[in-house]
Length: 400
Image 1: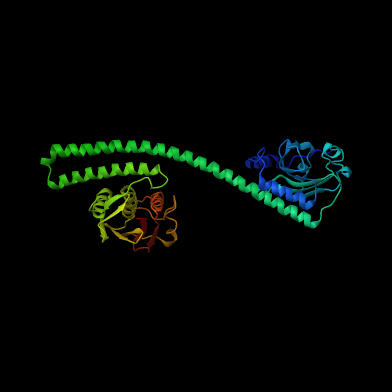
Image 2 (image 1 turned 180 degrees about the vertical axis):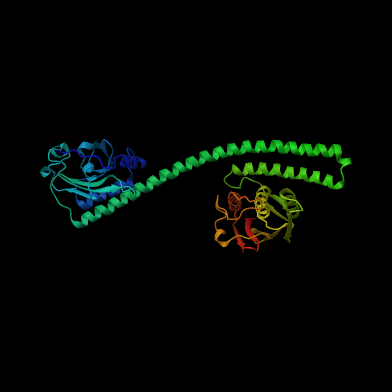
């Protein structure tokens, strides 16, 4: 008897086989049906899906055989995976020097005839075979050989599909872990941001109480603006932290948003009258939505327009209207515009246009991706219209 040699890429082959997480797994009806079909087509009492491990051949699927595995040293399939052809056939093992005294030939199950089609991974590494076995000499017709090839292809398709499911599940678990870590980080970051913010607000309030009589009206107005901006920032931090922990917005509560007040407050938050002018153009005085999420969207879009402005004053116009089922928004600016080749990419995470902001920094590609995700969770869509040198218009909708 001739023992099979190891494949010339054996370590890679075993690594590939293990990546399928199939060894010692339960039987599966889809594969068992194909194994039975191979036996029926070739009219053999035994048909197997055999996977060749480092020291054994293990049967993922079997027809006409009770054992689950045999030694690799005795395996016909271990010879098959070393061949240069995809198909390996032994018409009468009793007359073959490699197998005539093999215990599987001389004793049960009496492997006299063997035909196996090699199962190969995407890396062209042989994992095992789909084989048919008879206890008497015989031949296969061309039609039967073609059928075995087709069945082996379908078996590999199933194995690859199940491998992809394993990979997706592993990635899903990794993503869940990352999300848990991100939630923990967000909680810590929110606490660390709120503490100095509260101190700043308290200091501004105390300063106002003590020195209000010594400060002119413009100064008191500025202190009031600092306090109001701090309150909105604190509310925004709390809202974003809450939003990061939910999969949808169904657990949030809508409330009335006064469009004029929102525009005024956000203008004070992101800039000053010296570098930004934000105007509201709408016949609607208020809308019913989620204030924190709308703030997040508008702050990102307004800040984007201000950051990339090439004018002394960034002029931004917010247009708001409605359809039967949606509120419709447009944020229009007088900036440098966006090249058409980037307009489909800027909403993807970590994708940015080539522009640098007015301080020479390039964006991180997170802001607009966050805007898109938030709008989609609100049942809407966003897109941009722009010509280079003529500003940009961001159009988006949210469900009423």
